[in-house]
Image 1 (cartoon, rainbow, N blue to C red):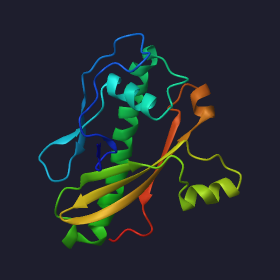
Image 2: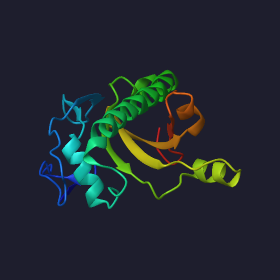
Image 3: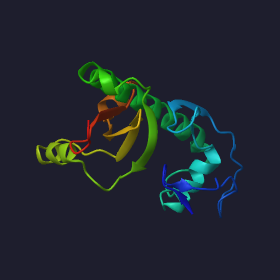
Length: 179
């Protein structure tokens, strides 16, 4: 069974995947992202859980166990950067609607949508720009009011070649999300 809040198994799978050659760490890093409905923060998947997820989704063909430390570190950093950008929107929202922004924003749930282009990504693609390698929708609980954000993740080859952060994160409120 899957957890609807994060599309991961309800019981985290920390066992070795079929055909896995090397043991992977099962330690899970705690994020800074507040979890809605609790006083806790979200917890990132372990290297083993991440590898198992790639295997489950048939995306493990071009990765090895040795790649997992870098992959998970990058995944976690990208999510922290995404949350920081999302909070910038939340601060702007708080200035516009102070009566409904008294509570700290907390991440209620998120959903990966790698095969669904957002309207903005579709427009950029039509204009000749590259398309994102992933998309997420994150829903934030703002004191009982939900706000959905669309996140497009782009890979920047030029930045990577010059040893800069190779990812671009485009975070914005969903057009159909209530304020």
